[in-house]
Length: 226
Figure (cartoon, rainbow, N blue to C red):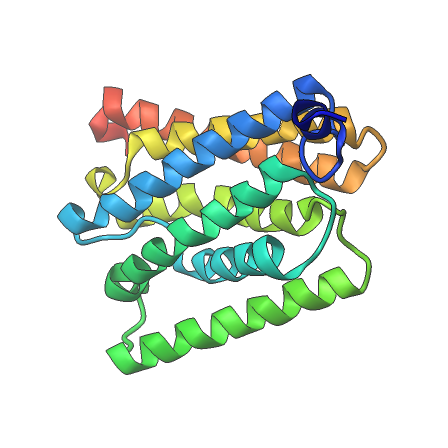
């Protein structure tokens, strides 16, 4: 078998999914990578990180576990997408350490804030690990990924409204999150037609993403309404 035939047919590379499914996965990875790039760059000038702190702690440990620890035949696009996400998330988490405290309304010291981050990372790690070894996840990590993604999608508009300063948030992130999740959701319905739990999670996340894009768009057109 030739090199190109191996790439196209081996489940470790691109052979597990159809061409269309691979395309949707790749588009999802591209938009999420773009979103991550914006999230790690914007805080340098805004002195604010828009990734909700609570879920940022789960995000980074999820990508570490699924990108490097759990061994599943998920294919090259997802595996390297998760690994790329982890590398970018290291820099995002650096911004969370620097500026994430501004999201918290209650008074907390810098030392207390860093301790809180550590507790959240460890807690999320235990939840994700035991969820996996208990057999509740799919081989793509989609169940736990969409639990996290749904929390992100719900918390974004809440933080956006709570902060009361739309200039701290990125309009391109709202669209990249919506499109990235959208392409992954299409893949979910194509490849897992009978996995109703993850379909419901992805559907709810899509509704929340649409709401956030609408909210942000309305603010841009009529700032006084936010």
